[in-house]
Image (cartoon, rainbow over all chains, first blue to last red; front, side):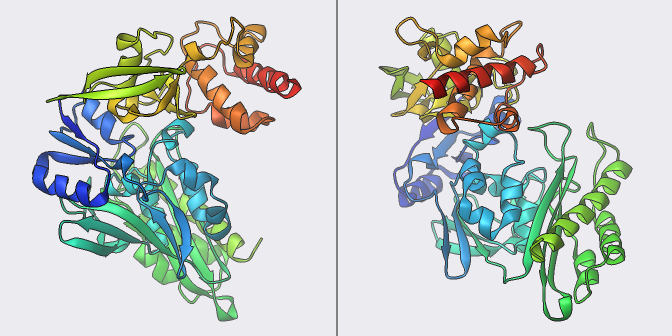
Amino acid sequence: MIPSAFDYHSPGTLAEAVALLSRLGEGAKVLSGGQSLLPLLKLRLGQADHLVDIGRIPGLEYIREEGGMLKIGGRTRESALELSELVRAKLPILHDTAKVIADPLVRNLATVGGNLAHGDPGNDHPATMLVLNAQVVAVGSNGERVIPIDKFFLGLFSTALQPGEILTEIRIPLPPPRSGGAYVKLERKVGDYATAAAAAQVTLGANEVFSSVGIALTNVGPTPIRCQAAQDFLYNKRPSDTAIAEAARLAGEACSPSADRRGSVEYKREMARVLAARALKKSIQRAEGR
Amino acid sequence: MTNHKIDVTVNGARQSAEVPARLLLVHFLRENLRLTGTHIGCDTTHCGACTVLLDGQPVKSCTVLAVQAQGREVTTVEGLEKDAKLHPVQEGFWQKHGLQCGYCTPGMLMTGCALLARNKDPSEVEIREAISGNLCRCTGYVNIVKAIQYAAEKLRAQ
């Protein structure tokens, strides 16, 4: 398949890229790893007059700890995240997530920034970033701004990024001791989008009660879904099988899946419940250092 | 829409061309360079038949623009044989019957080579994970895994 014709630009600096996007206007799209954009263009589900390739801009691929945050360059490839010892040690949930995205060949090109900026509810990072309370840094012609993740996903393929803005960094506050998180995905085969998936991130505070809880779901609604009722239910409670079961039930209620080849509405809702319970259990085990 | 001048090192030889922005790397390899060892399977980023190494990393060349390869190194299945001798991974596929129809084989070979370049002694699970983006509809993967294990052993002995 051949995409309809477009022109290609490969700026060498971020400033040049921003200027190009501003000059070219709405017909221009940012090309990062290309693993979502190029298939869309090839299938002609999407169209672009210009691609601005940010792949030759130095300094956008990194994973580093700074000021209590894990900072990830927007162009960091999923394979780098998967292999990062820092990620494995500090945020196992992020390692869980990276290694179930698409397949190993796609992960050699696909980028973390692209996974978020695409706004596809089937993508895996969004739910994880929600439970980690990440911030997204965007650079445009008006300079840099920081977008809290809860304000980032607006709808199907729609994010808070303005036309002409480039996602340059993801900032994740590093959780305190006795925290743990996990991402659990149900997929028909390697490379498929999730039938459903759940992210959970918890911290155990004084008296062994949850001092923070994050639960979010992938691909069971038009956006990734933060399960507020389930989070509120667990907050300040001790971990127990009954508490987890009730939180998971609330998580299942929070989703609004559509039926497709991956399953019926009822099946997906039930899987969301089951996966939320599994993600919570694994998070608690990790928080307890088990 | 203007053409773009690219210089790409393919199997060690520098190739210069003027290409349209929308030309896919796989078409550049097959049609411009006549390197038809790289196969087009699904053409939708699923099957991995078109896998080539881009700066040593296996990628799906149906989902890379030729212009993105500007200044970079590409290795295709034609680049594996050296001095009329098969690469150990190729030899493994031969010895262990790692193929039936052969359609997925170039992609499997490239992924296998990349795996063994970073992991000299992969476990069966690691091999299966590494090739999980390459689909084979004939063999059930058993002999493909054996072929890569054969190559790993041979490379370690060298």
